[in-house]
Length: 291
Image (cartoon, rainbow, N blue to C red; front, side):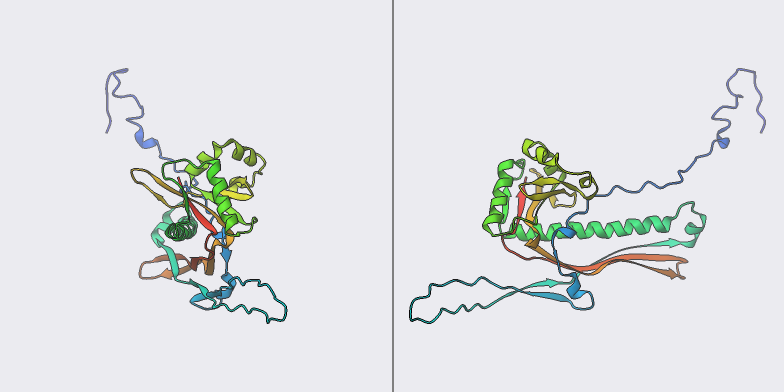
C-alpha cells in the first residue's frame, strides 16, 4: 500500500522499519559446537581389553600374594610357603548409548550436515560418560577404603602432594606410572605453588591438547572437569593421586557408531555405544585428595 507524506516528516523514509523485509537474517555456514571437557582418565589405568574382545561377561584376574623368606637352619627342612590366593573380577556391565534421529525433511531442507554434527556430539557424550564414570568408581572405592588425604575447603599444598606420594611409596607402588588428576580448582591451587610452576615450565606444548599440566615429584599431572564434585555448604572437590595399577578397565566394545534408516519415522537413526567394566585393582595405590 502506498504511503504519502511531507518530505522530511520521518514517516515516509525508506529506513530499517519500512524496508525491513529487505534485511535478511544471515545464518553462519558453520555450527557452534558445545564446549568440551578434558577426557583424560581412560588411558591412565591398566587395561584388560584383549581378554574380552571376543566374548565374556567378566575378567577374572588371579592375585599372587607375597611369600616369606625364612632362615634355613642346619640339618632342618626348608619352610614351605602356602598361600590361599584370591582373585579380582572386572564385571563387563557398563553399557552406555547416545542416540538421535534425523528426519528426512530436516536433512533435505537444512543447510547444515546435522547428522554429522550430532554423530560427533554423540561420540563425545559417550567418551565423557566413560571418563566421569571411571572417576566416580575409583573415588567411591578409595573413599570407602579411607584412602583419602586433605580437607574439603582447604587448598592443595606442596606438603600434601609430598605426603600422598609418600603413601604410594609405602604401599610399594612403582615410582614410574604415578598420576595426579585435579579438578580445575586444583589446577589453580597447584599453579599457586612456586615449585610446581617451575616443574611445569619444563613441559611442552603437547600438554595443552590432552589435559596434561606437567610433572611434579615424578607424577604426571592432568586436569579434568569430570572428577567428582559435590556442591555443599563446604564445596567438596575430589582430585586423584594414583599409580596406573590402582584400577583396571576392560573395554569389550570400544565406542562404535551404527546407523539405520527408520521408514516409520522417515529418518536416519544413529546410535553410538560402548561396553566395558572397571574396578579398583591394588589397595593403597590410589588416593582421593580432598580440597
